Length: 169
Image (cartoon, rainbow, N blue to C red; front, side, top):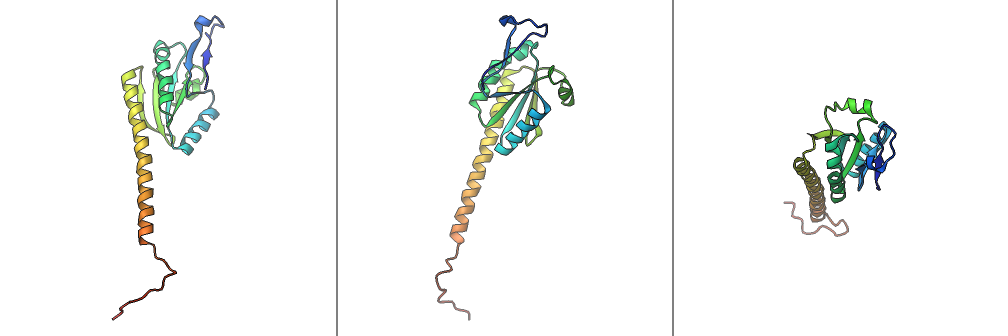
């Protein structure tokens, strides 16, 4: 998905002030409509969403951004979002953001986990755990489907064959 750069709020366009926060498979959310669309896509595709509430001025957010982008490329079964708390102030307030970065893990739009702060090892642990749980769910579903197909074929009756040798005594 390319790179997205944010400029200093003072209007300074010097490239030294540009902060790379989005790259890889990280999707920048710029409105409530974007948010709703991404959650809908994730639900449709059976993906867990990781929502990173961040800010361009936040040193720990900038430090963690490349790692977050790398994880997005290594875990395509997850949807990685970035929400700038300064751009979406009212929306961020509804999520009760007290510090940046704050990561919410969502399944079907419901929070299943949360991490506050730039704790790279803990973020890695949570991403891996949720990615694995998604894989297990999918493989369990595939195994269940296979089991059902096998059971149906094993118990199927061939109605074209006549029933013989029935002893009804």
